[in-house]
Image 1 (tube, helix red, strand yellow):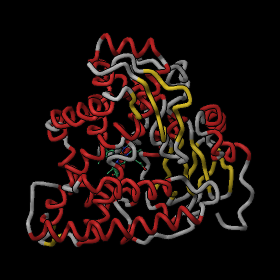
Image 2 (cartoon, protein in one colour; image 1 turned 90 degrees about the vertical axis):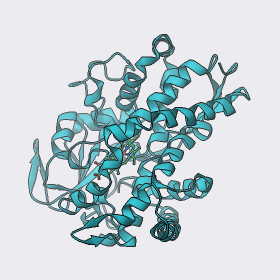
Image 3 (cartoon, helix red, strand yellow; image 1 turned 45 degrees about the vertical axis):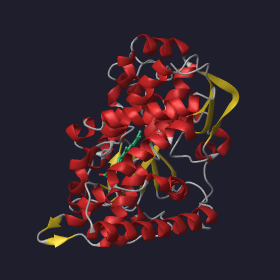
Image 4 (cartoon, protein in one colour; image 1 turned 120 degrees about the vertical axis):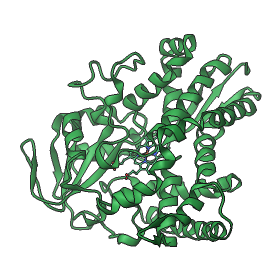
Length: 404
Ligand code: HEM
């Protein structure tokens, strides 16, 4: 934040306060009530479902976030991945990888996901304890996306550290971004670039059946992608492919353990796992917010939006809008239709990996409900990540009486 910016209003300070990570929802409720809301010059906050849903689909809202008046650091087109691009460039890059996440392709991964998840449950729960984040929620989606891309899973620790450093930069520009966060992210980005450049070189010489090889070979108008294009796309897929899903798994296990009657419904009918996934996405969104930058003058309700304004979408608040969801703070896996939630965003940037994430987490929850004997939350076993945007447990310790 620049030194001459006016002080952050109380509601925003409350949202960013690390002390509220466990339960940000009372604060999000207040912000939704005020939406559309301009807490600072250059910032418009949206928290109502209808407003978010319409504005996310509005082409006047640009994804080039570094063009915002509030942005401290312009990134430049060469370091932007397609999450930060607008059509037509966005369409061009997204199209190159969309096939890998098509319904049929994703469905064909189910047996492998099942196998990975079963192994993880078995090896961890044999000991009587499962640290859900490290034993299951990280390795499952990370292994799946590594296999899709063609990245060696043995490098897991390095990739996890670099990804964690980058994910902290996804918090919206609401408070002072610590110099530590920016420096660590720049370092992590440089390491990712070096790491992927080496893999790309290897695959150019000896292609395999993986996404990196595919990206080295695709041609557009007779031209191949350069290394930079491939690197930024790989970093996006690797990070988006696990930093979010880990939180969905953590949030889901926690919601089930805290609502035993809902957990019993799942145990009685494991085919309800996809419904549980949708309700957790709504009830406790793993990606709490996203931003756009207004290109032109416009209006949301009675609030004017100016070119260069950052528009902050509180997805977690929209998912609890009482106009759409009766008794929104109640976790109810029988809700219909929970799938109208905005946890995967909406419009052009709708999550490319939504089908994959839904499948991975449904399989994990089905196994969670059938394999583990008497899982229960260890008192004091829950801590939250410090991230505001990517919301989920950092540590979630459960005790079990064995594995079936
Ligand atoms: C985009 C959420 C899993 C890949 C997004 C966006 C959200 C999101 C909210 C859009 C952000 C915006 O509109 O500004 C989630 C959640 C996930 C998840 C909650 C898990 C629970 C995945 C997975 C992949 C993935 C498994 C696999 C590769 C992407 C990509 C984009 C994206 C590539 C950019 C799409 C674009 O700009 O066109 N995701 N995601 N995501 N997600 Fe996911």
